[in-house]
Amino acid sequence: MPKPFKHTAKIGDQEHEIDVTPPEGYFDSEEVAAQFVPRDSVETTVRQRVDRAKRDARTALLEDEEFVQEIAGKHGLQKAGAAPPNLDERLKSARQEWERTALQPLKGEAESLKKANQRLLRSVMVSDMLTSANEFGVKKSLLKAGPDKTPSIVNMLGGYFDWDPEHGHFAAVQGREEDGTPKFRYSGKPDETGSPHMGVREFLKQWAEDKGNADFLETTRQPGANLGEPGAGSGKNVVLTPEQASDHGTYTKAREQAEKQGGHVVVAETTSQ
Image (cartoon, rainbow, N blue to C red; front, side, top):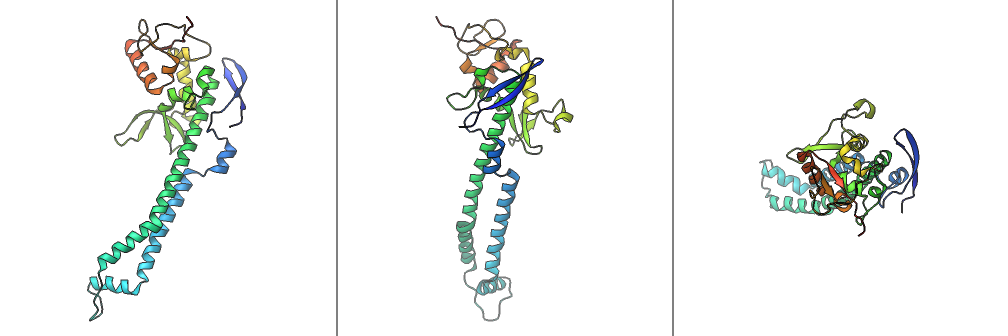
């Protein structure tokens, strides 16, 4: 279980020291350094090992005198009277053996490292979001892990981010290319972040400053009313239950609907009858 830690957050003009309990799967910097390796290093190591395996396979074939004579014979260079064996079968057999003994194990290792790297990146995003959410006064109930062991705020807004490998941080996404490559939103303060793309903190700050999201902050709560399907609220607002709001897909659709109607998303808390 990750150890709790204290975080100083600025709410309004005052700073408050907040106890933060990280969700399961969170790694601090020491654990990251002890258990994981940088993604670039992993890719470089795997690429080098594949290249080395290819070179070793080629060297082994070139040192096989009979095989060399067969290759030379195919190009009209064999000695007079030499009858080359079935070259295609030998090449096919050599390739199959190389794939079995070298390539397949490397693929398995690369896949395991890829999954470990994805888990690490996920923990980085969760940590960044919780830190920023605390700083900007998001309701404590949204910072707690749900049945899927993921904080509700991450389920709500995590889909708006993707890893920016060029600048080494999670950035807000505003669409994707045809091949799925993310198109990142540009930062309004690139000089402060050192990146041209909007990071998690800047996105959460703008989101918290949006009056349409006031219901998700500690300073404002909406009374229970008109619960049910998204869009069942009165007027131009779209009303969601806390469970609906914690689902990224439902929240995104509700926000798009509210914007079209000229309203905003409201989270209505249930009241006892």
